[in-house]
Image 1 (tube, rainbow, N blue to C red):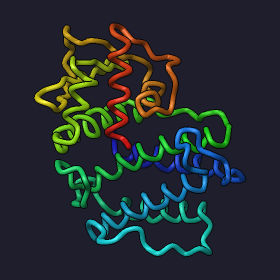
Image 2 (image 1 turned 90 degrees about the horizontal axis):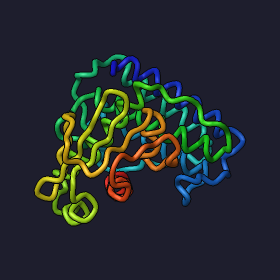
Image 3 (image 1 turned 90 degrees about the vertical axis):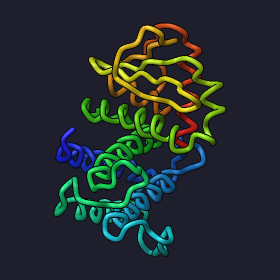
Image 4 (image 1 turned 30 degrees about the horizontal axis):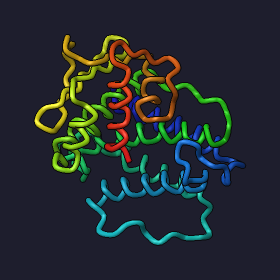
Amino acid sequence: MQFSRLTSCLTADAARMAKAAEGNMDARVPTCPEWTMTDLLEHVAHVYMHKTECIRNGQPKSWPPPRDPEVPTLTLMRQGLGDLLAEFTPREPADAAYTWYDPDQTVGFWIRRMAQETVIHRVDAELAAGVALGPIDEELAVDGIDELLRIFVGWSSHKWAEEVADSIGKLLPKPVAVTSGDTTWVLRPVDGSIDVDSEAASDVAVTISGEPAPLLLWLWRRGDDEGIQFDGDEQAARALHELIKEFTQ
């Protein structure tokens, strides 16, 4: 997905999030039950501020910074977004920046990650406000599924193998396929970790499929089973769903 498109999605979804929050700052967030809308936007603001600092100066030594209590949370979130976009604009995606993902230490990683962070939390805000969910860009949704499965699940399962090997053994004993449109991801347990590839396989326990947006929301536990198909062992699909939660806490 082109970085310019990711930035456009980030900007649009942040605006929708702010609109949903207006007048609803005390609303509970059903997908993050311990949070109110204020907590949600405070989190998003700090995420934007943190990534801005990562690009400017590398990994922050202490976090979060002192909070000015006079600045309303919605204003803080908008300021954080503005500062983040101001860091993206003059830089190339290939420019160096500290990230937590070892294979990609570039600004482009953060452009992608912030677009995906924002669309999920925009949905959280809309659910909290009780308004209809806005559309999710189809290409962004496919990219989000790819990021979740390849980086949050696949790469992380190797990075922190000792911590997750037992859960993988219990919840993913056999390969599982996830598919949307003409894109397929096969999650295969290998020596206590998970390899993710795009080649169709005949030995999967179940194939989980759906249109990109509902499938993205289902994987991130922001949507129900509507529009999601399970071809094979549905319990294996539920087990993968539970396993993903361990990588996205």
